[in-house]
Amino acid sequence: MHFIPVHFIVNLMLEEQKNTRNFVIISHVNHGKSTLADRFLELTKTILPEKMRPQYLNSMDLERRKGITIKMHPVRMNYTLNSKPYTLNLIDTPGHVDFSYEVSRALAAVEGAILLVDATKGIQAQTIHNLELAQKQGLIIIPAVNKIDMFTSYRTDGSGAGPQTKVKETKKELAGLLKVSQDEVFAISAKLGLNTKELLKAVIEKVPPPRFLLADKDKETFRALIFDSEYDPFKGVICYVRVFDGEIKNGEKIYLMAGKVEGKIKEIGYFGPKLLTKEKLVAGEIGYIATGIKEMGKVRVGDTITILNPKSEILNSKIEPLAGYKKPKPMVFASFYPQNPDDFDLLEEALNKLKLNDASLTFQPERKEGLGRGFLCGFLGSLHAEIIAERLKREFELTLVISTPSVVYRIIDKKDQQLFIYSASDWPDPSTVKEIKEPWVKLEIITPTEYLGQILKIFENLETVHIEKKYFGQNRLLLIYEIPLREIIVGFYDKLKSQSQGFASMNYEFLEYRSGDLVRIEVLIAGKKEEAFSRIVPKSRAFEEGRKIVKKIKEILPPQLFSVAIQAAISGKIIARETIRARGKDVIAPLYGGDYTRKRKLLEKQKKGKKRLKEIGQVQIPQSVFFKMFTQ
Image (cartoon, rainbow, N blue to C red; front, side, top):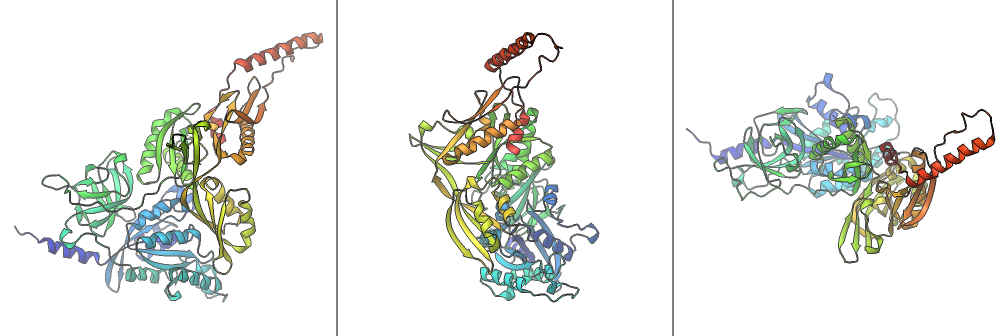
């Protein structure tokens, strides 16, 4: 029997990987990432023309309905350039601020990035944020200006000779941002395919082959980074991986270093973009590993997969885990309750499955009177919460009651102990509180100058600190504010888009916890405290918010046989009140004439009955009321 030397295998592996390129497409939301990915799939003949559809990689129904990318989507393409075959691993990424964690995970698995900018809108807030993430990873950046077909001078039919000013201006801005020559910025139309072939050629020429992290003598050691995962009832957890060192074959035993769990590979392969099997994955490749592990909580995105020693089946203690990526911390929390109490177990299973490919989603059980059992869930933003709720509804057919999103507060009590408050029901007695702290963020807004007045009106009633205002390009402004996170998690993004007709963009990042003057508004219905309706608000706006809450409850709570008082209170002091009149019954309707005293006796009897009901009666709040309160 002849043995092949290890160094020969290593050299062969390195030779194979010289023609591999791993890259992502990053940009602001709706700047054309998925459309550009479509053109690459066509150029490389990865998808046959008759099977091609717009935004092919956006496989989720929710993505196609909303027209945005929510999940990253990897795909392997084969392409020949100058008679050399190349393997191109592309990851299409989301662009919305709430899904920046998806971008960070994709960047950890590649060596290069196409930075795409819409020529009609120019550089936006997420353009800058995603660029900074890529630069921190040390990636090669290839800049491109998209949607040049929107300008007559670039149309393929030769009609029109309109000015190219907007495209030139955007190229100049992008070149200045990257500190490169304008000649290095590509002008493309992903929709029509203009110059996309040249852009793909630049990826091959400029993006380096896959990097290896271990010394040559250690190349036989296998290490792969998990950057995403999903669950299959037959194959267990399927990990999306980037192999950094060594190789792995089907059927081998594996070990997850952070989760401290073993598994046996059921299947390995790559994304074509569907899951396609192969015999092995080697260093530099992006693919998937069906681990056979059925315990979803033990598989973590960012973990390192390695191989158990085939002789002793004991992990080599010298292997160091990969650095992974910076895991984001959820900043926005909301309670999810199944409208049908019997669906609690289904909701728990669904959240576990979603968490597999959404590292920033957190959840823990909680119970509230009137709602039953549910989960307190953590998100990166309100859109993130909306998307999770939509996926639970569409993919698992769950009808949910969802509380108003809130942020995490820090309470320092008089014993100098620190408490984290995730919902208003956990708010401590004010007499025990020494200091209240809340999260503040740095908010960046890029807007055309003509919408500045409308945008400034949004800030009139908000607690903000203006930091900077400067021109960005010829007719756009960059506004920088410091603002409490609670001010922007509900409705702010929609207001910004509405006031700027969709042209303004925003990005925010966490700064620190700062002292705040906050109070809890408690809601009493017929004298009984309803914790589910409690809110944490600034003391200066407490009376206004209290009036809004009781007025809204009055509109949606069904009338009772007796009058019901709805009150908002702070520390036992009533600050707002509404009354729902008793549901009336015409007790004198059966009487056809006769003495008036008979009618009066019936009315007095009814009045006494309502008074007695008011003293002993209880208001049963239907779950539909909670649902309407939190969703309208």
